[in-house]
Image 1: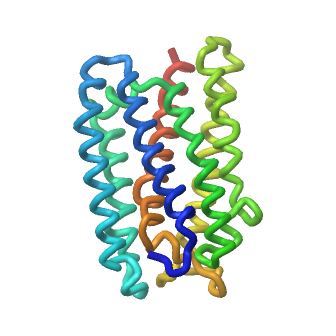
Image 2: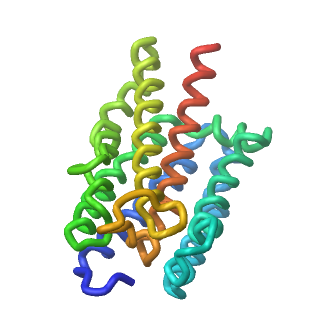
Image 3: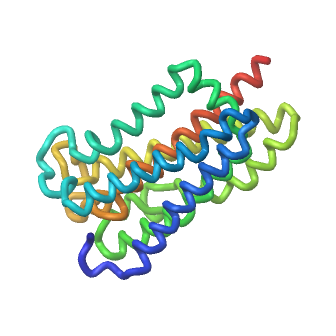
Length: 238
């Protein structure tokens, strides 16, 4: 835990994490395939277990006890496994069937969680837990994805070519925004790969509950964009 941090900041972030999980399960429950809908509960249990594991790592100070290790422990035990899980889904036939069964509209709505995340990051900056470059007053424009996601979800309901092209472009742009903040966050975190923000480093993601951001929330949003891009490209080729 970060000392002297107002209670409302981790509380809002915890609720945002819960909302991300709920929206993702909601997306699965609205799958076009019955067999995929039946996986909602096992996936919920698996993701909840993952969140508990990540919380334990943060509570036990595994991530912030030794910031000189390479690769950083949060990457080794949190980020890499999540990315590997996404890769396996896209590489396996059953995984691709699952991905293609998910409704793009619901995947798009997932991005609304990026609004409260950006607000929390700004609060953390004010309390010297992240650098300004990780906020919307710095290099982070990720809040645009959250604000525009309800509008873009509308385009999914249309079959017009312009709407499909706009959705595809939006996903690529927002994926770029996500990569931008992830890179800035990782290179601002105390570790052998830190490149900037030495005067006010990103210590938040090494502590509970903010370690859920790179180990859970970012992978969920990343998966949503990649799944939507895959489906959009398939529709253009059909």
